[in-house]
Image (cartoon, rainbow over all chains, first blue to last red):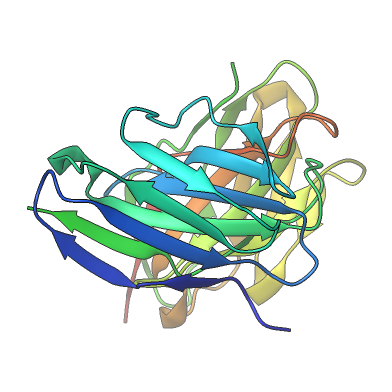
Length: 115
Length: 115
């Protein structure tokens, strides 16, 4: 079974530029999560989708971050404009459903450096 | 609010020695608890999880964890550490069954293994 795919793996941009990350979850998984992991910290949830609807985006900086999951499968996370403090690893995860007992499977992440 | 504390930022053990990584959580009801491992450049891999029942849970790679409600703890143990266990370990908590599955992570414990 294929795991969660993410691209690109690495991205370096200047501040105020825009960037987009892509995630392809495990086939059949209805729930998709985007986490931000700043160096030295644990991952923090940015946004959670159930199929193509948003379940939780309470910690998403909506003035600069946006995300979509149009057909309930792939998802993109965008940052525009980027700030220095956005330097982090962006992890995508998926699970069968959004129950607390459903295991979340993580992709390898995208490491973003903002200069 | 839910929270997870991992008191040890960095631990060094000798190969073959036993290991215990500490995790304390704050949650009003019975939580769902998880331990994940993250190797450099990799996504998070689930080691084990606790939902209910037997408070001692077995995971992959020879790891186990014990849930102690009275101490609000979920410590990870391994009787004999291998050099390949060097990685970052994250404890996480999820809400109850119908609360969306969002994971709250601790800040992580980095494990180094001495030959």
